Image (cartoon, rainbow, N blue to C red; front, side, top):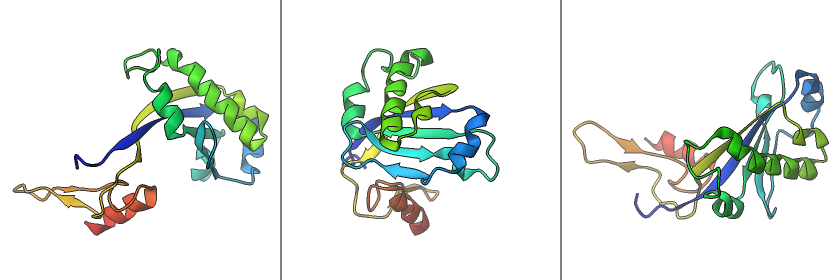
Length: 161
């Protein structure tokens, strides 16, 4: 497991006014991969996972390059930093998402949270689908870093055990 290396990213989680729910429901996407974008990796309509969402929730992930560059910046340096210190970088991600989608309202959430994701993208996944520990009780290690580097790899890794 020590050979697996990860890059980091920043994640903005934004909640919007219930009055925007009908607009969010009509978006032609539930998720957008931002391949080649200078800042973003993913824009997701997280509230689309619910049967009857009350308000839109958008999740925006930075790409690895932006995440690595910004991860240790002032206000982001630790989980104990004040959440309000993280808001400018979260707002930057939302502004970029609004530009990519053409949906200006994405830049104006009611609630914004920003999280640091230290193990976001597996740079050097292992070939095996899972690893077992030599312990008295069965102990298996699985994840997106086993047999690939995407969520599909995590699913297959879990099924392999």
